[in-house]
Amino acid sequence: MTANEPARHARLEALRRTGHVPVLIVGGGINGMGTFRDLSLQGVDCILVEQGDFCSGASRAPSRMIHGGLKYLETGEFRLVRESAAERNRLLLNAAHYVSPLEMIIPIHSWFGGVVPALRKFLRMPAKITERGAFVIKLGLWLYDLYGALNRVMPRHRMIARHDILREIPDLDPSLKIAASYYDAWITSPERLVLELALDGMAARPGNVALNHLRFRGVKGERVELQDVDSGEIFSLTCDVLVNAAGAWIDRVNAGASQSRRMIGGTKGSHLMLDLPALAKTLHGRMIYFEADGGRICILSNFMGHVLLGSTDIPVDDPDGVVCDDDEVDYLLDAFRRLFPQVPVDRSSIFFSYAGVRPLPANDASDPGAISRDHSMPELPAEGERKFPILSLVGGKWTTFRAFSAEATDEILRRLGKRRSSSTVDVPIGGGAGLSQATAPTEKLLSTIMRDHGLPRHRAHQIVTRYGARAQFLAPALADGETFLAALPEFSREEIGFICETELVLHAEDFLFGRTSVFLERPLDHAALAELVDAIGSVRRWDDAHRVMELERLTERYRKFHRVEVSAPPNGRPRFV
Image (cartoon, rainbow, N blue to C red; front, top):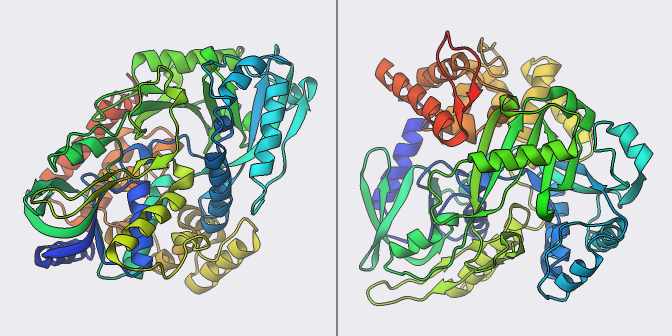
């Protein structure tokens, strides 16, 4: 057995012995995990379960923006804008290893377009904005700067003359009149940030556990039943409060408690990764925030040397198995061609796609974009044999997860008769401890790793970029030499082994999609996936049959959820299908 297997075995054994837990959290996305960490920091005993891997739903499918919500000004959601801007600034401080400032560029094609409908929307009157002119955008950015003043760490907005923006990004549609620049932020690895919240929570309260691949089975009488997805083993326990953080599956979890109240009206957001390195280089790390057909806001950015394009906003009833469908592909590529009319792009440019379902509140709005991204916490009171209430974490957005988690934690503490002992406002997350947007702390960390463990500078920089301050725990495992993968040279077998043993990796896809962002960084061929499975199998001591199963699981995921065919040689390069 490896170090990871006894750790999970010990956690499952502890669960077998647990007849009661004060708080049970169902769902390991950003809202659930943020609440798990906060409760752990307050000394509250709790257990979190996730039916898949952590951060496997909508939390893993964002536009990778950490933003103050510029577009929410149109609907007069000033509280949400204020909170979002403040939380964005806090994440820049508390998670500096993954969250960085990002310049946003808005191409503008008119001077006064959208003034009347913008005013009507601001006054909560029916209106649809199909074009935003320079006047509307300038006013919005002025307000945005005001709301982002708390803990300001980035420049104010500026307007850019047409000839200047075309000199900087010459492929832009030349029909634009002017452009605007403002700053938000981006996150390189949301998957790892969610994982680090789990690790922080378990470190703060060692008796607390977060378990992946353990699903909520339902409520029977006064007890909650959970099931190990791999083994089928069933666990039963009681709780004082059940927190339903299942995202787009919230209604399904509540149905398992015999409650049919509709809370979720999810919308699908899809993204494409385009292999256009020359254009990505032109963007210089900036994100373009632009209007697609009908006025919907889309984004396009340089992500790790490739182009990230998104997103759609389509109501869906079933969150299982959502993919970026053909209509969405056409919509996004058409939007790209209007933005960059001279840049050739087609389906052969796509090397990855992904989709997620935003857990928005149930709503009959004809325009999905008009549904609030604010959060709420509706309660299903104790009823009949079920002696505990269910608090459902509805809505929210990546940027505001800490504030939402704090609200949930405060409500749970009130119900348990406890008081908050500490705030999470200034608490670093995981590998963000000791780091900042300044370079000095990173340089000091690099120097320490190089001196103490003999790693060359480029390798020390690679693992610090990947893990932040947590790289100091990995470095000793690499000090005696590394064997790098031939088809995936970014990783060594020693690094993969350490991550598998310490970060709750059960399957190869947990590592590839939940502990790294390499799946977005470049196309991965069959050889890379096979070698990765072999490296993980060596750590987990999988037999040949299990390794074949894990490789098939990876290629099937690529095909089914990301529309990428990853075939064994001689079929060659992965292709979008």
